[in-house]
Length: 551
Image 1 (cartoon, rainbow, N blue to C red):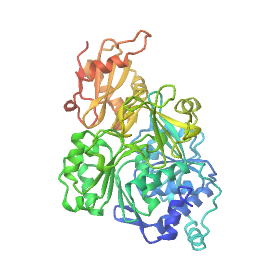
Image 2 (cartoon, helix red, strand yellow; image 1 turned 180 degrees about the vertical axis):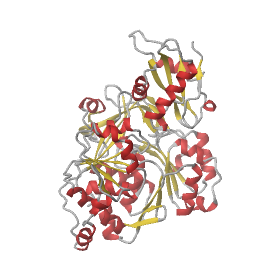
Image 3 (cartoon, one colour; image 1 turned 90 degrees about the vertical axis):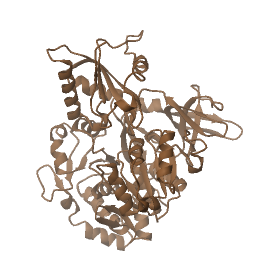
Image 4 (tube, rainbow, N blue to C red; image 1 turned 45 degrees about the horizontal axis):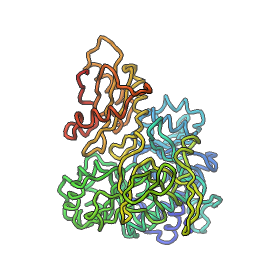
């Protein structure tokens, strides 16, 4: 029985030990290799005194140590917290403090960049450096972590007595941080059951087998990116880890490794669709998937033309429930704007404000029930109570009372049961596959001490989904508007990952307010969504590039 995340690797190591599990550049790991190293790292964590439930953060790009640290945390009955490697110290500090991280696995360079903020993380006891062979003060080298444990792991493997299994599938496996419409990112608490059931569900409708080879280009801090690992490991497939610089690098990797499955978000698909795919790459790809934003019909047409032999799966999901729906490839031409139907082992419903089920073609809120629903938000009972609520349904065919996740997304269901996205019920910005809190962007701008008031908006954009624009009133100084904009831009670049940096700064004399005295965000959206930031006007590098004259 596969109940815990690390058991996915243990099972494959026992049943197909020599099968390739992981590729990284010119290095590859069999399932036996990966499991032995997982056990060794887990025992290393135990020697550091990390006990059941301890949070272990991984702040690294996609590399073998990232995968091993997550699997080993699970095997040691700890909780892994993958941190997006694009995040800057300000965002990393919030995550380390919010979930009381005790151990951080990172590189020497990244640890140096975090020096100022880690001093304020009182519960952080260990920093493991994956690229440092010497044991420095206040740090543990990756090699010393594994000292005297690899031989022990081999002996345990040969005796088929690898690790004690005192955990259950309801225990916490991971915490993934995602932004909401207000405040800083929230830690979504995922159990082993959430993750293993999610892997089984996705693998079933993608028809994954041990012959598949998946290319991992998305960050593991993104549930969709992490899914590439768990889905592959569930069936004994192979995963290729990749940090790409240019879209063409992705094509080269598909061709080099003969990739059969590729997952990406709309901005990347938009770039890949414009490239000429070599025949050897198009012939190996069995399927591609999309999540993290809608794919315009024109883009799906381009992808079908570029990849005629690949099946295209459009998916919808939220971190709080992993995946919720998918559209079968054979339905893409019939209803290309649909988000499909519920994935296996999940039920998705469209409900009114009172919780009653909507009629066909009636917009309502999408809610999701079943084993993929997360356990809530870490250390945030109020936000958990708002999003994770009881769903009571009784009738002649069913009766249940359980916790469901209320997505905040408005959708409708057609007469055939297919779902269509309408809008978000909140103001969260979704750009380049990332969910970004307006409040988080605004907080950084306020810290610059250059702005009096600011409103961050997500405006429609052809390839990004939404582009971030900030409407600001500035503190009067002798500087010109251009100079102020340059300072704001520099401040953002220092404290924000690239995908969070505003694409435009719009300076006004006064921000519009509603009758309650609050910033009129809806009015600002109406004012700027058609008159400013047309798709062709935004540079995809997501940098500040235009200042409106004051109005």
